[in-house]
Length: 350
Image 1: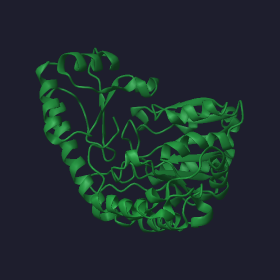
Image 2: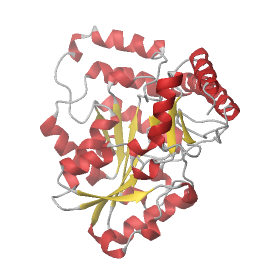
Image 3: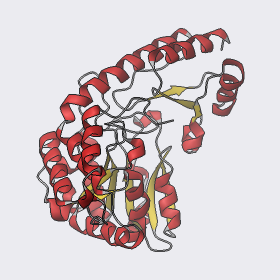
Image 4: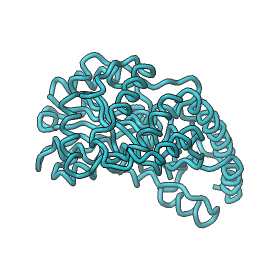
């Protein structure tokens, strides 16, 4: 599961305690977010990506990034419209499209193309019918990363066909070996067509808190806000105040979290290689995307690992048909448990 086992950093918890004890935070919040929280988002983006945002019109608070990802199709997809959706991928891109009455057009992510969507494979007819294209880099489940050249090609494609780009950037801070992901909004022209989703869940071990945000194109933010004003009553202010603390203390807590995941990654990669798997250490995310050895299918291997080794992994085809031939492992257990998992896998002699 993509649910960190690590606790939320103490300073964030302390900020939450103070905020909960303040009666002024016990009322309905603004659906778009507190001014101070949106200012903190803009300040963090400025520091992290050198991007200047208008907090009022180019940011919005979310009840977790998942909420925004699921709701934005309701604002921009009419029944029958196409959404270009990568596969394998986080399932909510597809589900949100279906809930809005749209039609998914799946774009395979394959090893031969570095798990990037092949934009040239999308026909002119399909592209002209599409309203949204989804991206997610660093990527879940493949752990792939994207460079500036790819993002430039996406922006050009989106401008050509008047498509809104929805970029899920929730794993931008879980990185290794000096790798530093960029924001799509750093690309010239991206702000005209892009909305970017972010979360405090993975970066600060706040999955249960349900706090995220979106930034980018003003019309996209306004459209998402229109949906939110009708389906929720905003994010609890005490959680937003804890979020301000998290964003302000970014460099402090993130470095420690990254060290822990890097150590776990190295343990699992070493153990899996010793068991005969061909696996490369990812540059980002807290997952491993592991090729399945012949003659197993994804489900066959996941079943054998569960039944004979007592180790739970996710079959890759659960994220979409091109995920067949892979399993996904999460680094969300402590080192002793991961070492135990590698020893159990070795013991069954794949």
